[in-house]
Image (cartoon, rainbow, N blue to C red):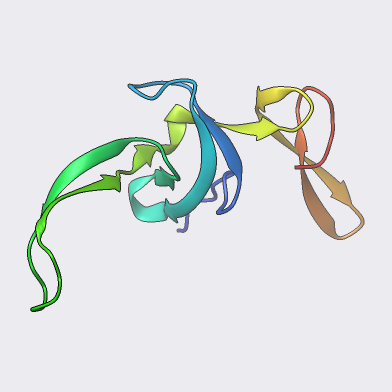
Length: 104
């Protein structure tokens, strides 16, 4: 059975726990099987990279590491970090802000 996540790629999120608490960024990738997301510019870690070709430089690179999905909250344009609700409009299902009711 496939899990249903409320956060999708390209969503604006805020980190609510961990070393980067308070930072905002867009979701680059959602890793469904591990319940994790990668947020642009957040949770930067250093990783040793091996040379892949003659021209490629190896060494220590800074990359964005995955965060658990429970440590991020989606950001509404009007009211900031919020939870997501759903409204069914005919045969369409829309994500809405729980605080102000605006579509996300």
